[in-house]
Picture 1: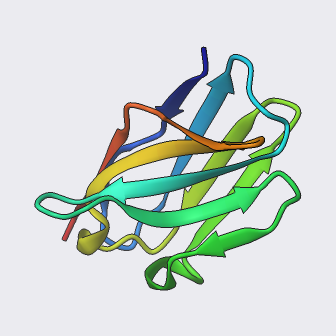
Picture 2: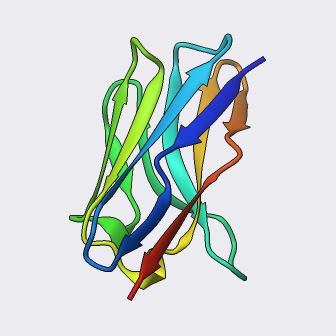
Length: 118
């Protein structure tokens, strides 16, 4: 069974930084994407950033230049460095692992809350 555990959320002032971490455990395909999604109050979950295990990142336009995703394939971890945070970044941030075999399976963490004070 695959488990994803996020950490690093919290309260920060506008303009500040946070680093989210996600640890994956269990058995899953070596071909996978790991990334971060977020869900703000009253809104749908949306992609923030994702990275293939080959290292190619993709970002939502709203976070380009401020957020950086990285991963450690040996440790099965993914990170999200968030700089210049804004109140509109307030959301629950979810770690995602998309395992790719002959089908695609999505695994999710329970989420970590990021709050930005203005």
